[in-house]
Image 1 (spheres, rainbow, N blue to C red):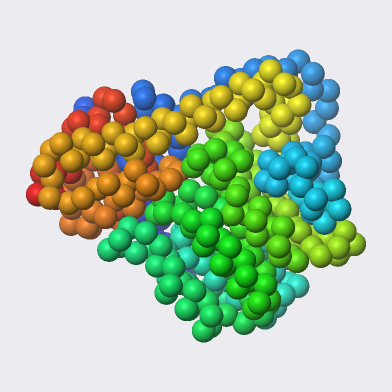
Image 2: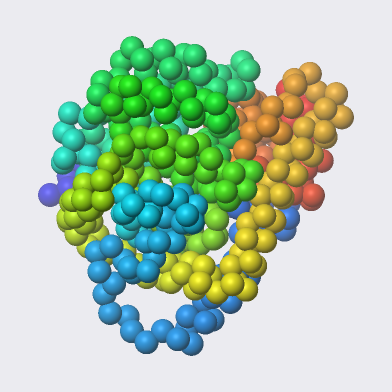
Length: 398
Ligand code: PMP
């Protein structure tokens, strides 16, 4: 039955993680993996999460099915986190949200929904984008197109080229995927002014924005990171938002996310949401409970809520602090390249501007593991390895 099947290559990032694990060099540094790490190189369980889990264990009374959309009390949390407590869109009932298995689950349901109900829509993604965006939408038979985004010369956004491409080639009904903040893989975000320009364009052209919010709280703050998304949501008739709780609650393996649909009227939102429910049923039937119960327990307990906010702030400050330290320490080595852009990037990742050859030499000669694209996971830097890392980069870059 399977004789005709050829093995496919695995994800190169996963191969990088395995190579790092098997490397006996005590100085090895892992800047590949996309999870938050503390200064000891661990991906910790947040204290607020531990405490919430204890409360859960003590109070849980059933493991019965949750229902297609997950727990009903979870949807307002998704909406409040994304749009802010008193947002008119919530009050008017123009947003409907469902719990999903991670941000990936949300994107997959969005892809199935688009494929079945907007069959002529093409998906526009940034060049580059998170690798799984393309795989998820292609597997749902949605055509994927690219718009220019990252500028390797200025380490900023190629905004004029991005807008020119969208202007020339998008058609009404196409879907425009934007990263809400902390763009993966580059770390380069749109400015608020750029969100404003894109909002006007989306409305003029009649596009459906799909916003991927996987790193809320890791850029400039839980509220600040949503400024562009909120601006657009308040001005466009329709929007889809896929969000992830993996990073900001540190519950990666518990698979907790959300998919929200915003429509022109409450009735339209309900109709679309019922079809999203169908897509979920045919996909994984119902989401897992654990992660969402943790989030709900934290959200509704004022003490745990403040503890969680403090922990998000701590993770954000650690990453942004490391960005500043990297810039200072690299400059102090006398390296020929200007790395000051690293401090301006946001989130877990940085497109370092290192070439493939430089990345390979860092791996073979220094046991420093960075993705072939030059994407570094900044959270993998620590007080223990930063000097070694900066010296090695300086030697390799010259
Ligand atoms: N979107 C982006 C941009 C991501 O980087 C990730 C996770 N790497 C996801 C979505 C999916 O997150 P989750 O682990 O919650 O499925």
